[in-house]
Image (cartoon, rainbow, N blue to C red; front, side):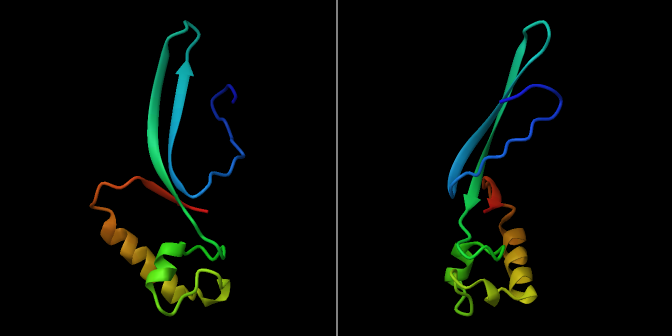
Length: 94
């Protein structure tokens, strides 16, 4: 995909679990790699609140972007903070 100290990948992943692997090789051809499991959450209405949360909350509709008030966004962030103790993959909204 590229070389150098920084690589920008312009690719969108579909919602679901993915494993991202970085393989680096130095000038003496020694290689190292690291993998990270991530979860891309669906956000059908692009309001920054994932569909699963909107489906759990009776005041939110995963297909209506204008129902995501700042209070609802804060409630979502607080619920995510409470889940942080569990072993979960990294999560990114799409």
